[in-house]
Each structure stands twice: as structure tokens, then as C-alpha cells.
Length: 208
Length: 208
DNA sequence: CTAGAAAAATGAACCGGTTCAACTTTTTTC
DNA sequence: GAAAAAAGTTGAACCGGTTCATTTTTCTAG
Image (cartoon, rainbow over all chains, first blue to last red):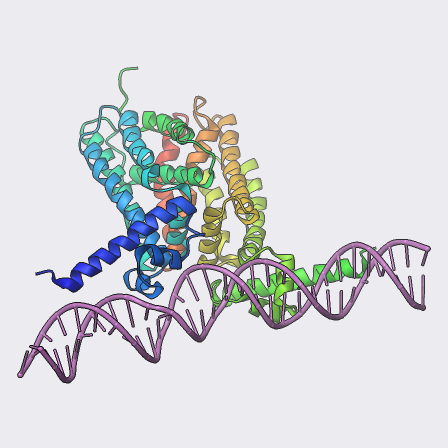
């Protein structure tokens, strides 16, 4: 039996998170006060801190939901990639990029990234870093799959290539969210320009 | 004639910055209060804000000094690189890395990076981003020089390769400063593992 | 059903970054 | 050299994230 207490706890936590998602998107992370969230969720300020360690924690929770979803889809791509290193890599990367702004704004991404860099040891920071690690692992998995198929040179270490690609797509994503005016299309183009020659270089020499 | 006012202004700004460098290194960015800096510099809190826009601005100013120095040395390496793409790239990269902790702590780097991501439009953020851009440009310059010498395949775009390498060294540096326990040696090893195969791939096919 | 214990909610108080109206100092003008 | 203007300094007050002693709610034992 869940009990009244458990039930109310779950309901309150959900209400706070919903209030946060909505307000953060609407007004921007900085200008939303904890008091606003508390009011919208029908609880007191202190109660918000009972459910989340601090303001950043609430943001990370919303970011985590979005990343989990992207990881889910990415797994299918990594398991059954299309033929050709360039096509496969870009499919995975664009999956990440194209989902990134559905639930979250650029400002929310910036804040979450900043938090994870500034306070890497806190539960917030660690959680975001762990999500990053899993994204990177997915790129590595994809490359290993391609290598198993003979589409990438056998001598290359998938973990090294995966890290290289992930570092690149991640850094370009940071530039993307740093520039409020940059459209997704530009991000795609930039990464394509980098991944395309890279993919040719790591590909098993095919028919010229 | 510099005038009394100008002289005092310069002296005060310097005293505040010196107080900041010393305190930030000693106690960590977060636990240093503006009031502490003001006291140490012999001015009031309000005066600190006359010289620096906000706390982050003071940090960026100290970071900028360090990056300017590294850029200076890097220019020589980019202009006259040693033979071989791997050797040349690593020399430039290690120049960056080896200087990074002379004046600044990992915490200071983390905070500066977080600031530039979180508030890219502010003077702080822009200044840090601009420094990053110049570092990236230096990598591109180096690659162009090597290509001019015939040490890198002619078909590859130096700007694209430069961005790729810079993204990678920057991201690995972020991981380095995020992990308080990681020694410089580990950072060097990780980047070497990534740059070495990359350098071989972009190098003009030499004698096998 | 009730007393006591355990869990959770509350909001006033704290803390430090930031602002700004009043005050001082320096420079300029005559 | 005195008065007015310009530039700079000051610290008390503001603001919002965070804490914690107190109060309220829920659960459990008898």
C-alpha cells in the first residue's frame, strides 16, 4: 500500500517539477525565483528544498528527462546504424541535436552545462556528467558496430575515435547554445563539415 | 601628465586585482567575498564595482592575463613548428596545458568557463570566448603552416582540422579541471592518445 | 480512538552579490 | 584661490537563494 504520505510526496515533487519546466521555459532560469515555483506548486519555499537540493538541482532534473529520451532513441541508431561512417555518425548526432530544443531552451542548456562544470562534485554536477558519459559511450558503441561491419579501419580504437567525435559534437553544441541567434541548421552544417572529412579518413578504403 | 586621479585609479585597480588573485588562489572563488577583496585592497565594496562589473569580471581579468601569456608563447610555436604533425600539435597543446595551473587553480578555470557559458553575452563571457577563439585560431595557423610545408594532405581544410583539434583539446581540458584529482600527466596522455592517430591520418602519406 | 513518534511543511532570518543616493575628492573655470 | 563641475568613493539597503527552529501532518502502537 503506497500510503497517503508517499502519494502526496510524489504529487508534490511532480507539481514542483512541472512548475519549474514551465517557468524556466517561459521566463528564463535566472528570473524565476524559488518562491515563484513554490507558489505555483502550492507549497512553501522550504518544501521545495525538501525535494530538490537547490535551484540547479531542479534544472538538472528537467535536463535529465530530455537526455534520457535522446539516449533511448540513440540506442536504436547505435545498434542498427545505416551504412557508411559519415551517414551513421551524422544520424546519431542529429538525433541529439534535433531533440535538444523540444523541451529545453538554450538558456536552460547553458545553465545546466555551467552548473556541471562549476560544481562537478555535487550530485547535480555528477548527474549531468554521467549523462554526458553515456552519450559519449553511445558514439563509441556506434563506431565499434561500424568497425565490426568492416566500415572503419581495423587498426583504430573505437573508444578513442568515439571520444574525439563526442568532444567535437559536444563543443559545437556548446557554441550553439552560447549563440542565441544560431539556428540548428548552422550547427548541423558546422558539424557536418567536420565529421565528413573525418569519416572519410577513418573509413576502410573503399572503391575510389 | 598622468594626473593624481589617473594615478590613484590605476593603483586601486591593481590592488583589487592583486587581492583577487591571491584570495581566489588561497580560499577559492566562492568563499571569497567582495567585502574581503575591498578590505584587502583598502577600498569600499562600492569601489570594487567601480572597477569591475561583477565578481566574475574580476576572475575573467585574472584568467585573461594567463591566456595572453600562453598565446604569446603559442605564436612562436605556430610560426616555427617542429617537423611532424603529431609532434607540432602536441607541442602547442602542451604549451597550453603546462601553463594552465601556474597562476590559476582548477576551481578558477571551472568558474571562468562556467561564466562564459552561462552568460555569453556579457562583457565577461565575450572576453573569455574571444580568448578561446584566438587559441583555436592558433591551432588552425599551425596546421596551415604544416600544410604549407607539405606535412599535411593538401585536400584538407586547415580551419576545419583546427576547429576539430581545438574542440578536442578544450573539452579534454574541461574534463581535467572538473576532476580535482586528475594530474596533468593524465591529461597529456589522454590527448596524446587522440591526437596521435589523428595526426597520422591527416599527414601526407610518407615512407611506410 | 488516542498518545507519542516520525516525517514533512513552513516562513522568518541569514548571507553575500549588487545597487544607488549621499558624500568626498579632484579638476576646471574665472 | 574660491566656486562650480566632474569624477570617484562610500556603505546601507535590496534581492533572492538557502537554512533551520518551529509547527503541522501522518503514521504506529496499544
